[in-house]
Length: 279
Image (cartoon, one colour):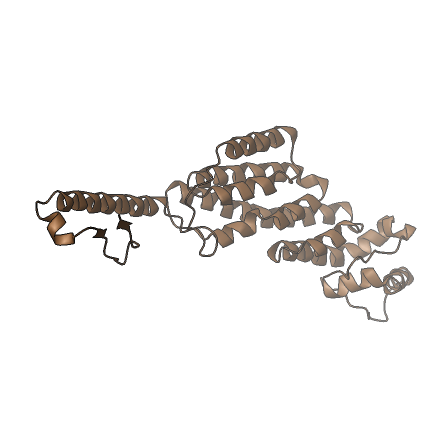
């Protein structure tokens, strides 16, 4: 329900009082009318804001902008907006608060389902977009999850478990991406058991890091999501190099090798290899 500053003349004196309070509170009126927060803005500390009658009046308006603002903060990875929302009171009665949190949970469950899909795709060695994956695991997403009310503690722990499954599927092929994700995940507020699981995975991955790991698919171009294809490319390159070595050995063992090449051997530059010389 969209809040409008103006109202019909046929309203009760109580509603007039409530509307006057909102009009005199720049932060609250701005939030209700625009659905966003001015930087570092705080609602006025009015005792009546906790009054059941006031909450019953404002809840239908506050519910809609509150849910939309939080989902927008996740979509835009806007930690400033989420932080500003977090430092203000949730002006909802019990029924509307429950409904708002349920609406937010539905949205977050969709994001978790997307992560599950990433995990399934990686498990089947299918293609993924690393940048879209990062939108669900970034440090900004972690911070936004931490800003949510205490009722989301269980969801945060469940979400962390799914991220860990993704990391495990990713770690064998793109360690830097996996290390970034597990490092960010350590910042998420979760239950003790999940926190221990995150630390254990971080320790394992950090101990198994390979400085010379080939990760050309991650970074500028993103992760193709096809480890099998990358493996085939590496094997093809190895086979070609073996053939080149065999051909070179055969040529060098030829009776007329020295007569043909004089005092030195020059490897002809090709499209795949660089120039080498033997003295």
